[in-house]
Image (cartoon, rainbow, N blue to C red; front, side):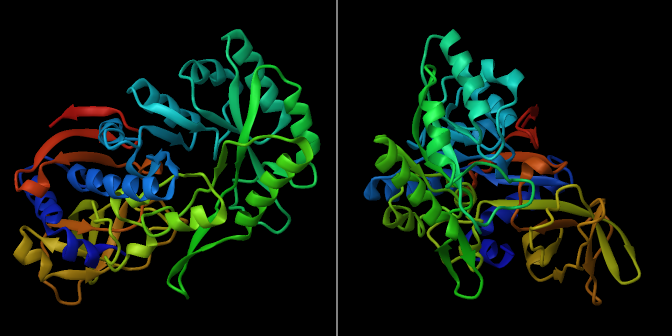
Length: 393
């Protein structure tokens, strides 16, 4: 999906990835992160957010919750993170990253509330009065008042399977009154997901029906309960080009993720300000019946893998781009398959892919590399897909 854009915009990343694999510094099933470009993309996002008067929380699940990269992003001024689940929150907080939004998309389990509250997240998203009560009790024990975001849901809104939950617009005011009676929490705002999505037909990022639910929910809390809301959080498909949509909608906060690695659908052709900054490295395991089989573990079902470069150096690989065979999401990704079509491929050759991913749900290793933009790549370390350091570079 992003191979052509990466060849065009970040050849140095591909060259570094091939060299690292050729020298045995990284193995197959490794994502390579270009920290220089990720940082540069973060600067662009921060500048645009400042221009629009928006605040950003960094999303790191797509880069494997990597603490080193998160620290580099934080240094650009995007200092707080949104944690898609409580395990990500703990990984980042223990690495010194400030927590912005926790609990969205995954609620905090009862047994983890104490530790997560000890890191003083700016807001916690809740789906129920019951969870708000749990948080209130613990916040009182810690002598503080915790700000909450209420996830609101309207009839007919888009909700991905496995992500259902929140306060229906019909019950929002009643539920909010119950939460307002709690002494350890305070309603700070509302959120939904997804608020924006890329439309393949129009080639643009567009608001979903959820976006109107977000604004309607905020209006109800203000008009019916007199609440002064400090946050209208509008996540999904947030990038330099789409942040203006958040402001036009009336949002105050956004949560970019793929924009840091330049892997938003909007950037499939490399036309956006963000530079592609992530590739997936594999290796040819064997050849069979007209296909090259490449080591897997990091293929993502929604990644839209289309093709890969195969070779032992840039010149050979860029002239040897093979189409990917369709993958079934029903099977474990032990291997990827490339159609040979008579191309010269050998067992052991380096394979470089560039596609949309969510590293934290893979079995991959993550190579964090700095200095690519200056021609002096330095392997900082190898991490697992959950942000734990395996070994130094």
